[in-house]
Structure formats: C-alpha cells, structure tokens
Amino acid sequence: MNNLQTKFERDLQRDRFFYSKEPVIVAVSTGSDSMCLLMLLLSLPTNLQPTIVVAHVNHELRHQSAEEERFLAQFCQQHHLKLEVSHWPKEQHPATGIETAARGFRYQFFEALMNKYESAKLLTAHHLNDQAETILMKLTRGGQLSQLSGMATRRQFGPGELIRPLLHYSKAELREYLTQNQVRYYEDQTNQTLEFSRNRYRNQILPLLTKENNEVLNHLASFGNQLAELTQFADLQLGRLWQQVSHDGNLVISQLSKLSQIERHQVVRYWLINIEQLVDIKESQIETVEQLVQSETAQAQLDLGNQIVFEKEYQVAKLSRLSNAVAQEFKLEDFVSTKPVTGAIEIWLPPEALPLTIRKADSDDEIRLKDGHHQKVRRILIDQKVPNADRLQQLVVVTRQNEPIWIVNRKFTYLERPDDYKTNWQKLYFMPQLNHNLKGD
Image (cartoon, rainbow, N blue to C red; front, side, top):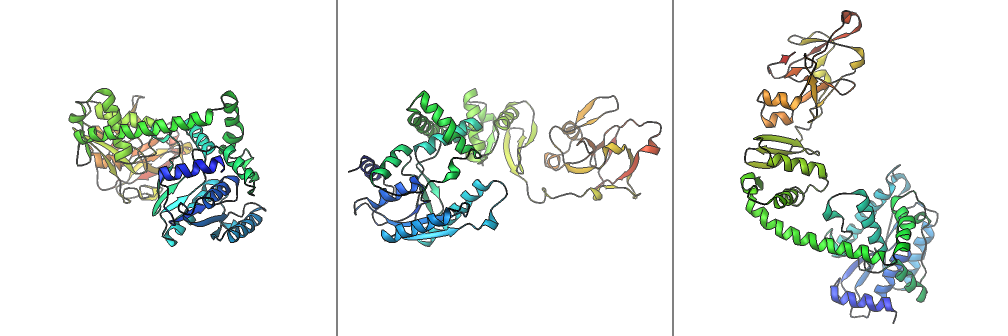
C-alpha cells in the first residue's frame, strides 16, 4: 500500500475526522492537492469511507476552467460520486481584491451544501506547504501572537466544522502519491504569477528558506503547533484571573492592581481580545488602554474604532459600543451658513481654509489659542466638565487642512486677521445647537 495512504488511514482513525457513511462535503478544484484528497478518500476501506459530495466552483477566470469542470464531471461519474458545481459569473468579479472575493464566494457555496446535505463536515486540501506560507505571511504582517499559529486542523464552520486532513503532509508527498497512482490533475497557471502575495511566498521565499534548511516546512509547522498549545494554556490561566478582576463583564481596576505587572498586561490583552472579541485591535491600542487603566486619571476614554470606545470611570473600565444614532452623518449646512441666521456667530475665514467639513472629534485634535499655543480638544472638554458620553459624540468643524476651528457649542480657535480681511476673507455664520454655552478666544 502507498505510504501516504497508510499514514492517511492511521491519522483518520486517530483523529476521527468523520465516521463511516457520514456525509462530507469535499472541496475539489481539480488541482493536485484536492485531487489527492479525493483519491485518498476513495481509496479508504469501506468501513472508513464517508459519503462523499464533491463541491466544485468554476470561477470563470481562465479558459481552462470549462475543461476542468468537464473533467471533474467525468471523474465523479466514473467513481459514482455526487457532484455539485457553482459558477461565479464574470459580471460579479470585482476590479480589485478578486482573490478574497473568490474565497468568499466558494465558502458561501460550501456552507450552503452542508445545509443541503445535512453535513457537519467540510474537507479542504490545505497541506504542510500552505501552513508554512500562512505562518510566514502572518509573521511578516505582524499582529497578535495568538494569530500567528497558522491554520488549525479543524475549526468551526457553518453548521459544523471545516477539516484539513492533509495539513501534516507536504506538497511533494501529495504529488508523489498522484504520480504513483496515475491520477490526473490540472495545474493552475495563476499560481505562478507573482501578482499575489501568497504566490511570492510560495515560489520565491519558501524555496529560498528550504535551501537554508530542508526541514523548514516541519519546523514552521512545529512552531505553529507549539504556539497554539501555549496560547490555549495561557487562555485557561487568564480565564481564571479574569474571574478575579471582573464584575458584570467590566474590569475592576482595584482588583487588577493586586496582580503582578506581567499578569496585569496579559489580563488586559485577554479582556480585549478574548472577552470583547476585538480581533483587529492594534498592539498600540492595547498598550494605550493598559496605560489608561493603570494611570491615576479618574476618568478617561479612547476611541478604538468601529464605534467601540474604551471608558474608565474611577475603579471600573469597560467598552461601549455606540449606537447607530451616534454614528449618523452630520451635514455642515446644519451648523454653518453663508447667509445671516438669527443667533448665529459671525466668523471670518481665509479662502485657503475652505471648504469646511464637520466630523467627530479625534483624540489628537487641538485648537490655537490667542497666546500662540495650542490646546487639546480633549482637555477643553474635560475643563468644561463635559460628561464622558457627550465627549464621545463631540463634533468639530474643520478646515480643508483638517484643522478644527470650532468645537461645536464649546469653543472657537483663534485666528489672527490681517487688516484687509473683510476684502479677502469670507464671512460665515456658525449656528449654536441645543443652546449650549459658547466660549471663544
């Protein structure tokens, strides 16, 4: 028996990817990887073999696509396999990001088939080389340590799970198996183009590393496995610490202060990523949150993006998710007019400052003072005792250079006007909202 087939059957019985006769969706592109997976499944003993539904997507990206679809239809007919095909029409192809869009289309189709056939298993042919490429790409991009471990052998997907049974086998092993068993497959020529980043890792970077050490694939996979295990272990320990420092899902700062520095650092990270599920949060944002939590400042807030705001209120830290009402679009004409308006304040502006726009205040915004210095908008709101909730909604009118000239209803920037400003500058009318007191220099 072929060595790969032996290992595949051994791993299958050990890991219990599926049971005999269980319906499984198998993603097949007609490339070497997926054809190898399909043949390995077909070659299983009857008592191990699942009920196979072959899923194929014709992306209509290449002239060869139609031929590949016909080949797979004949193959499935010959082996008495159920085949499901979906086409991705050319008119739906985006101008950019086509690789990501194609993947999204494929996985929507796979999930629909899982529901149709009441299958809890989707099998894909990702292998050891794919794993090494993924880890290298993530290391290069940077990010959270827990995200650098590469692909999992199995993960939740749709109504069940996505399984990668070939993740421990190299592409060379798969190709050798196909050659020995005289299995036909198609080579996707787009895998050779260097336009896509993964292809550059596949065709340039990984081969260069393999020359340095021909065990690099296994070493990278081992690194990923070790990291995944350490991450799981750390999460268990941090989960216990979180119970000690939290109340109603919020962070209790007085309890956090009882931990060591490294424990505090890791608990804050665990809170943001695991509890609040901020998977896209930047390392710099985590550091800033940690500094605010441990600072002597009684109240603080930080916009983390995606309408999520960190808030500190004395001994409690929490995250708030803004409602759609807070995130609404504001129209400049509701705040600034070129014509006189009762109760409006007249302000003269130089032509280079126009056009104006209105937006929510950022943490780095500041305005000019009469003495030539600048003052942070955040500091002004604190000095005026503006409640935290209102600070998060504060609007500013800014110039073409994105410089705030009016903290709406709060304060104006200082503009030194030349003698002929009435000749060369434009007069605008700034309209107070909600009868707040206005202050200006």
